[in-house]
Length: 338
Image 1 (cartoon, rainbow, N blue to C red):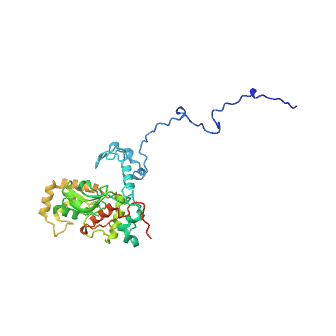
Image 2 (cartoon, rainbow, N blue to C red):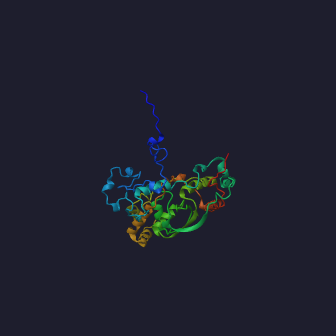
Image 3 (cartoon, rainbow, N blue to C red):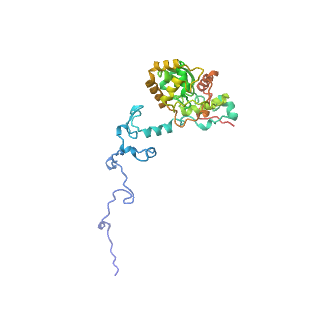
């Protein structure tokens, strides 16, 4: 049977729509009271850092006293003291150092070919004038002094016998004849620097400071050295011990027996008198350990890929002038070279 019945709208219960799009769309939060409250962050038991599994694959860090645990923030670092870098564990420091020290921050490294050849080599010392921008390439430089213990090396080719021989011979401070990066890395004069740290660590060392980090300064000055026509330097010849591999016994053998010292200049009495003047073997050990804590930046190129700026030919002064005037095309925009 067919039943025709008109149902009025008033007789039908219309469902309440809490918000447009209900129930297929999520509720559009519109007032502070409607906003979800985020959960309180919970600190992990161990630092969540990508280097940790590689540095401690057997999870031995669980058994180390937190005070001396290098994987824990705020551990006691015997070299730099507690909280040398606030809130960072040793893997975090290591990762930060690996990523940042040789990373270019202001330059495009591809604009500084290694080695520098062709037309760009011929125009390199005036290329900054050709990019259509007047002020972008000007880099601040100044001749100044630092305590030797404030400076850092940019290479590891530093040899114990040579540094000790210079220290015993009276070298302490003086002019490095070197460019120094804005983050205190020296580009040359490493043996004078090491000799000063052995003889008198707070003695003043002088050089030309450049307002570029080491990661930017190395490619710029390497190309400039090529433009000057300088030959790259290789590792020094001879059987001398690298200072980063040397022990206190190696240093004492050099002083007492002349091992790895230049026989032309070695004098045992003078060497022993020098050792006594700095405080004897314990102080020598402390100073050697301090030098070994001042390592080159991670990722630094080998010696034959480092800049050669010849201070004996006053190229350090010329380099400073070119940088100050903006003659070197340091930063973008870069001039097009055909």
